[in-house]
Length: 321
Ligand code: SF4
Ligand code: SF4
Image (cartoon, rainbow, N blue to C red; front, top):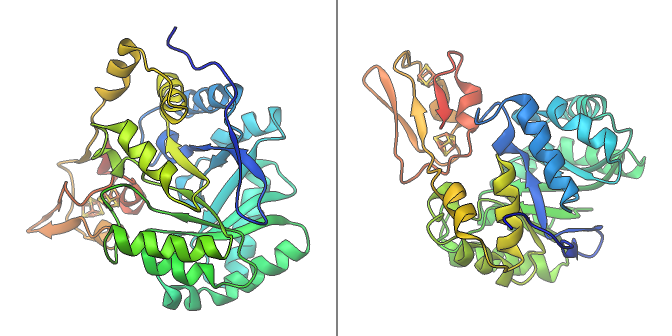
């Protein structure tokens, strides 16, 4: 029996947040940014995850996959959605929220986060957007608000924002992808936010695939961090849904299922029609891309396979395969 059966444990997200399954469906993995599955396959995988007890999904404006999620959200109105945007001004965040409400077919959005906040300084630059989010929360258009971040300083800055409910930090046992320090810095920042009873769910638990050799260790580490109640895991096949649910619930994983999931080593591929324009270089939060002569190259050890650079390329050169 390869499939997950059972009840997925629920965790309360911080002091203010709702109870959610201990795994959040990370929808970047089914989005066009990563290009691993078709839109329709992605919808089916998401539905499969919901049917197995995952009751929330993580997305973002940049993922361009609201339409992919909407059919499942229509069918399962109890499933909660987290989305995020890079909005800086009040007008931009209003537009982002409206876009999400329309495309996700939800009058009230569950969670809305400011995407990739690096520090208190970055947050200061987004102050107008944050104030507007507070207003939208007050009006009942958004229920819970927060930030996502790859930086320890982002967690610390976010924890001090007035009215914040949730932080989505990058966390894995080797600290891969932390942009402003090492694992101890991130753990100290998470501890700080935990003392303020802010809800937290981790991302990049497998370090963008670099820690996939020992996934049980990767998951257990995050589960052991005080103050982190859940984790978003990317899943781009039904097998991966079952695999992840067995893994986080510390159940035995059948060898056949393990082989099917673990043999999918991924990497960022740069097409040979790259024009060397450099637009993607700035879009990489990990600084993993650099121009070499007339083409861009990736430092694989720095790349966490987030797929964000794919969006920046006007020639569709960047793909995770
Ligand atoms: S190179 Fe692309 S996929 Fe890799 S970390 Fe940078 S933005 Fe993400
Ligand atoms: S944006 Fe596209 S074309 Fe420009 S350097 Fe990057 S991969 Fe090459």
